[in-house]
Image (cartoon, one colour):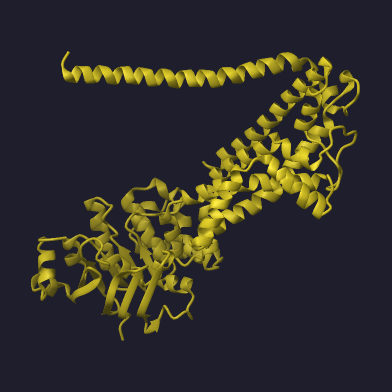
Length: 285
Length: 250
């Protein structure tokens, strides 16, 4: 075998090796997910029924349900998105389009990146100190949602900035060149073009808000709620907390409830994501 | 009085002096070509006249830039107002991802014009003046991204014409186009100079000699020579100009 053939053979082996590693990685990730799903479905699918979805929690596992958690999660996600999305997009627009690039801007940039990586429990403590105690919002829906919006805001800011940055500069120039103001350029061109990417960032951020439990436990969301939140100051619970509560009980019947709760939570997340993806595809035509 | 004029203009990118006391005057309804090697400051100079350099952080301008005798950098005139009077066509065709009609109408809409009849008439007039009307009149609702590159560039010219500027800046308008489309743009420049003052940056010597009345040669941020195009190309006074136009450097 001459040198060139040897080289080619080596490259082939490398190619096969890398491919195998990639496939193994994929199989591992997928099988863990499948295992988890199968496990949860086996345990919980029998409990998922209308009674389970519409009932309040109970001492008796077979009478217990998740309606307060489900409604609490829905309200919290809506409120969180309502607060975090406009502020996050606004901040991103400012940083990308209006702000001058100086040391202050860089400092803010670094801090936002850091905030995106701060453990969620820290946001919980912040929420407890700021919203629950200092602003006396108590352990309410609004306190929880405010805490959650702080948590997801950095993610929204970062992904929105990425989206805005990917708009070709030629379009900005074209718009300015016919006498459009900065705001007109942002409104007519930059936001519509970057909208699908911005939406993707929002989906990711909101999905995270659905799953987060720690910060809400910290600010004192309840675990046993027999009513639905009906105003911003209402105490509330969310699905993950309800699930956590059931898992930590000794009786196996409650473990089945937990598995059923997980199924509902997964479907809920899936529905929300699908909605967002449909919206995104419609706008990115 | 010159239509467009600069007096002792210096421009700095941070500490880098990109234009060195450039003084030059351009008469109304003339075509002036800016030539010179890459990085000589000709595009920077062009962008003085609609304040497009303002978008780049760290830019500082000294001296006077006058349009119709008024200094456009003195802060009293809104920059949007200047850009309405001084249109611009860029190197790469950059139509908006909207319909052909909306591309041309955009400049009117952002300036608060809502009269539908007026907008329709102006769009047609602008497309006619840009020699594009016959090709697109049945496809006005089509996306501007669906037409050819040469057509897109003429659409960009129509877009600039719609807000009725008196000066048009062209930054290598045909360098991204095929020879045929390029020739169409040149013909168009001939037509447009009846009504507009045109400043064009080009890397193409033949183009400069074909379309312009006067030519300015820039080198390292300095205006080396500025004269009638015929003179520049047949009898350059400066050695560097001669070397450049004969292709010995640049």
